[in-house]
Length: 318
Image (cartoon, rainbow, N blue to C red; front, side, top):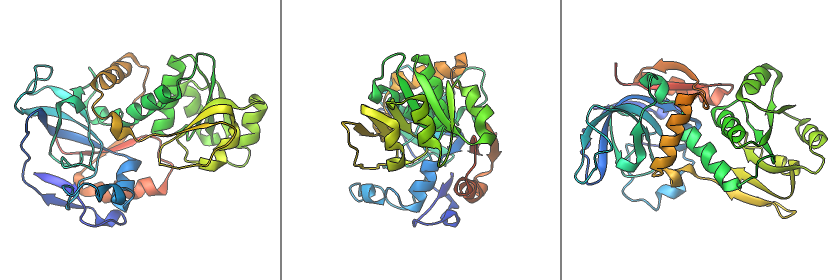
């Protein structure tokens, strides 16, 4: 099978397409014939070595390594003990954990636990279906961890990005007041997600939040990776969720949650709810373009350049 791989950490040019054996599903596992795999910032971080220390604890994870956390495709084989929830040939989306013995999503065939695979959204083509699950899972888990009450104020940084957009859309379903940051060019986009108030990115961010919320926000989801710069926007005894492991410190009784979405990778019920949210229009789909696997380096270079307001996908199937 064709797979996008890397054998050493580094810049996008370490990615290469190799022919690898087709994996066989074991007990409780499913093999998916991949149609498309989304290109996420987490993939670039994996390729650059951000998770190298975690891999030291997993001797079974050896080069060549395969990135990718989001895949769509068709159920191709069922391992022993898999129930009847999925059927051969069914269109599915999958939450893929590349830092594992299974490997990532950038391959023609992937094997993963049955619990990490759910039916694809009805009426959505498979390229578009590959773009949402991991980011939507991250947003949903973050909101659960914050446990805010209806009417509470939530600040979302990095609001124009995929994670930021899903945080806003799911937060509005929980009747939260959402204050989101955006540059002028992204204001209309963030408004379309349902944000109640939009504050400027950059130097005026904190003063703008405090003007709206003199005591600070009850919660803050830091999709923009502001880290310590965002803390003054939070109220005493509030909660802050970070997504790249920032350890703090925080003061004033603020609770800091370091969220690693891989921990939710077997939450089948949550995945199915998010598929329903796509079908009902609660969550929006932002597919930018489909690229050949050989263009993976180009896609990663675009991530590093910044300003992407959607998802590129690598398409393996027709």
